[in-house]
Image (cartoon, rainbow, N blue to C red; front, side):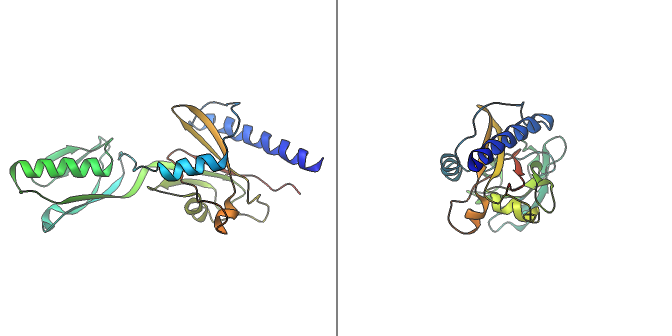
Length: 211
């Protein structure tokens, strides 16, 4: 009886978080059943992709043996950067590997034969993850590529004493709709479950434990 009541309350919490997602711009209230952690964790681990750059994001360009062409850049509000020799480049919407390919091609056309170019994102301030509930420092945090649930829980200061440590709910909106994914964070910390990769716009909600 107690177990049934506890599961029922968790289901209501998940629905509340889904509705909350609509209020802050990540999707309307949905009655879709929660996705299972195991299948989403596997897919999230296998399909982690670099995020596209946006205004305010910082990245670093390195051109082998070309110090004057290497350095840190911040995407302007118009989605551009000014790059040596090449002038204005529109970088918004490009992932780092695409930008590296663009710079490599443009430099190779006129200036350097077969340049080796790498681009690494440093701070993706245009993308956020929201953490709510029983954590010590709830709020919005800048997303970084391959950010995990453990990364963001660390930024949020960890659990409060009242937290339900193995039923953190991730609310995620993508092209197929809004999904709620219960994640066993403490088991991940203990090495008993696979880590879980977040996506930009995810809402992380830690409910209060029900004794």
